[in-house]
Image (cartoon, rainbow, N blue to C red; front, side, top):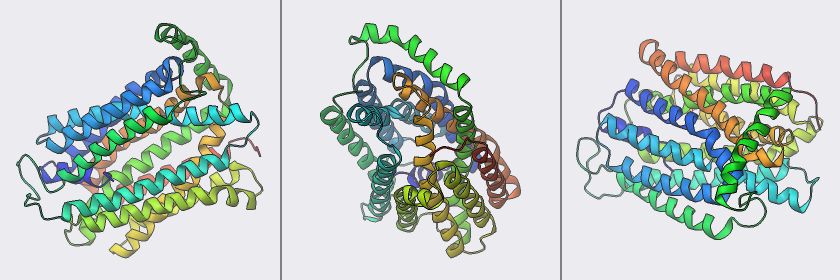
Length: 392
């Protein structure tokens, strides 16, 4: 719902493209610092408790974002948002996988992870449509300026309300195996954090596939952050300055999320057509993503740009369940949320790198130049995927 608005709002308040890059970097740095500790806390103290804290932080951050007026306030809101996302990152999925493996220790993960990715993408698509439509309601709010509320603010406050709904849903539904601390009490759980960290570090040291997947995650973070930061300014240029058309942007984001859902849903079937192993489809999808990013760089009109944009997200939908399946198969249950946080950390580092470098490249050499660099990085991800061992 908020993917377009979290860039449009700072622009409407007068922030420049490099300053927006700073915001993205703040988000990435805070997430980088907190990702692994939050995962260790989730594994040791309880995934349910960590999710509740994360949901509360998301509510606070979105409320702050709606009222922010300058770079410092936006940085604070981004830091809170990153802290909330770090707390949530991996915890829900670790609970889900542990619950599945409790019922059936040999249960395959590709199909349920694909369904979970598709459901998440469908929610994002619905939210994008809402986030694009709400600012078009005539509430008498200005589009730009230093007023307490802008026309985008009600949609962000609605997002804060949905974060409260998420918090209540976690409190009601996240129970059973994998939801609480392995050690029972909070104190014993905190003492278990060191053992969790040691187990996660052991997985990184002992498993070549884990190290390769972390490297691939780094590249995916660069590519994704480049697109998320620069697609709106580029499309606005192609449309002749239509940056305030939140309905159009919302529809395009919704279409991209539907492509994520479609890609995630098709991943199990496509992998079977290519022999059943995740590695082969991963390579093909990464190469397709390379072509899609090149399409964003080459697009001379809005229709071609839109096609390349949604194709890129469709590729991400295919890659995500494959990437997660390969990671889960290499990770012990007790360190699952921690390793998911480590993987998310790799993506955040890629995002920080993109935010600090490619936004400046875009400001100096043009946005297509940044898309070309991201395309090269995606090609490198395909090479990393090729180095993964063959598994069915």
